[in-house]
Length: 238
Image (cartoon, rainbow, N blue to C red; front, top):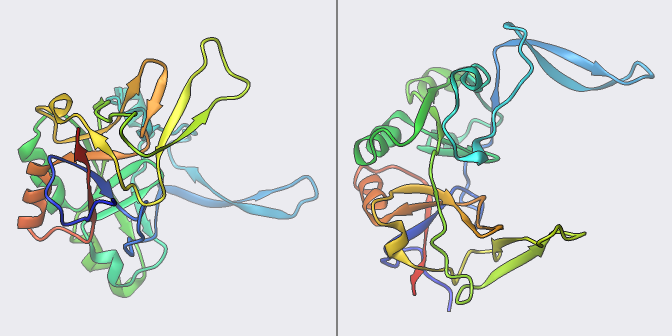
């Protein structure tokens, strides 16, 4: 039976549009710099890229779930570009790929509940002129989530398994949730003391490594403060 999003649980999957579309804002993380055309060998424009003012060309991997070094921090995006500024843009949660983006309000609650565990980087907003000031006032940050834990019971959960081919020695798999992330069973004692974390590994296997999990404590704190819109998909205890 699928879990209802209002069901009480100890562990939740944070759903920012990844499952059951919630109208999350359409955003891009960008860098300060000049927009330049990228041309193919025939001279035709293939797209556009940002030529950064500092001359750097690197990027960071938020999916690594590890603290960035001082050198890596120089490659953290600094601009949050709203591709579509409508009602959905004024929520407290957004994401691009594996990066978690929070309003200052939501980030302050996370910092209070789990101090010193994650890295926060302020973002400058770019959006339609009529929304620019209001969005900038929300003081968005991009969060580097710096911890993982493998709390999922693989045998009792309904998961999609992707085996790497050709298999390395030994073989390894990637486990993903089904399309609506229903029927995820966890061992909550493995999450003791954690409030926001990424999926982890079991041996050489990656288990829901693209997902973010949160505790009931953090969920209830965000809800009490009116942070949203966002989905909280409850996981079943083993």
